[in-house]
Image 1 (cartoon, rainbow, N blue to C red):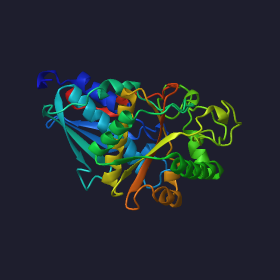
Image 2: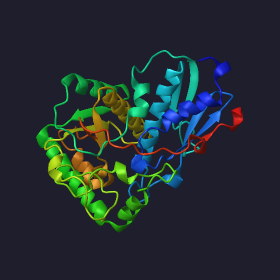
Image 3: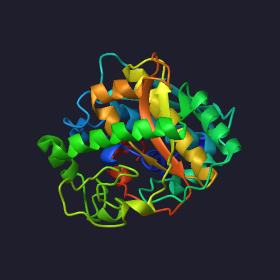
Length: 327
């Protein structure tokens, strides 16, 4: 794409792809601003959409923004430009999390991933339990590695240990007043705001033994599909990084989104089990073998074949993208 056609509509299309990324509680905690002189899109944290009880240090927020950065890179490449990415580019602006410049002609590509951006969304419904192909699992592992992260596929016994930690974390979340209230606030009907979790996307909300999905209603009356309809041995993978700094969280977000989009290309459904990562003591237990003690777990991913499930809505791009400089 030449500079002559690099207009507001094209940029808004790129940002629209970015905001299709997943975010913790669908908070969409980002803002985008264009520097027209350098053709750089700057991504800021929108702390007004932070979760002070669930995510007090902002790790989940950084992962969310990292997912959006990866989608932006994919979209820029789709339009024929090279995305030149810098993380935390300005020490004096801690809310400026990343800058992506539209460079010269694209030197690489992300086959199939741009088309997957709109199709990808979490499915919190039961999966079939059908085994995943070894070749697909290898591609997911390679996707994480390409972004500087590690994806570890757990054996059934190790997955059971992880699910026990997730179940304990979910119990704490439901019984912790502040976290339960925070969770409730992010359940939304389709009211046009595009924020939060629409009830129809939450999946079965009874407290299950099989797969402890997050209960965004926290204390509401159980309803939905019974536990036995969930797969008995969920396919679980953990995404981890060698270090645990803000830049590592942003890299982990990019790796996570690359894994999720690659899974979508293969027709594999995914859902994210973040609960145990929100409690430091449980997160440390998650980082014990089979993952290396020096690795830092960033996300737990459930994989499988099953219903697509409803998508969570996204807010208006123009509400998060300042493109006035090109108007």
